[in-house]
Image (tube, rainbow, N blue to C red; front, side, top):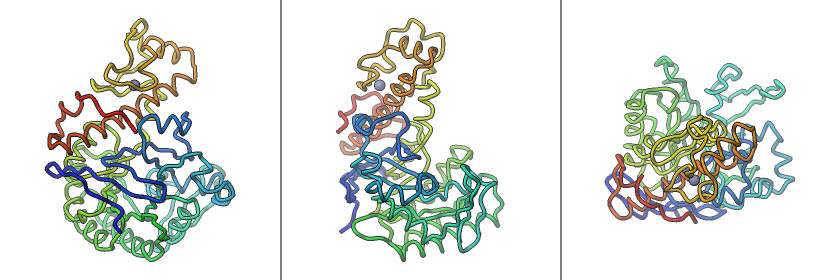
Length: 369
Ligand SMILES: [Zn+2]
């Protein structure tokens, strides 16, 4: 049985449902990031109330701290963090770019150096799958080797070939049991390499395919060209996941190309810095402009922050250093992205989806749930 049910298509944009051992989630889907097994500042019930159906955790960080054995003794990741819905775990591949200086890669394994205590952790592709399976993830990611924007063509080709060989090794230790294992496309910023990578990964029969190694500082036109090249060779019967994208316009453009899933740390990080995402663009709530502004963050949003609190109150909380400010704006930003995905889904189902999206942005989104 396939884990992805395609329900509607509008142009190349798709609406579907992904089935996991901890329930279904609808696509297009935005996954908030719980790097350390928590969506920062939020209780899991609040995450759910924001309209979230699936969250992302980081297996690399959790393997370092608190350690896989602690999570296992805590009853697995769902029980440990109090989230009973689907969980996708990132393998740690992305940290090979983000922590570049403290990692080493050879064909056999990646070696990470802990940012906490400097200890070295050697992770083979088989280990990466095994760690995610022990954590109890519903959707597991292969170990991949992304390269930074600006890397030379030899480095890009080597990393893509290594990613393919690691994908085969990950596929061989698929944990089964209804869990999903996703392959990851690499190929840097070369459309030919992207298509080759997508063809190689697509041929391995994964439950889903991710597009990795983008949104690393390249121009947005390059990012979308690489996305289109990747999507063109990913089989149509599996979910497609763009790793690390979380702005409205870019996600809508990727949905228009046929992408189904997203994650990003930025919306929750921005929230803690006082930046709220709205249908009219972003607001910096620390700004003095909002000192006496009694409107909610976004009049179109019915989240727990917007239904009760004003911009003036939130600005006051940031000025006073109150933690509630971080929580309320996080709730708002996550709700905003859930509504955006729900509105895109409705537009796809009704045949009116357009990436330019005035219609998607302006329309009243269905209630989360
Ligand atoms: Zn809101």
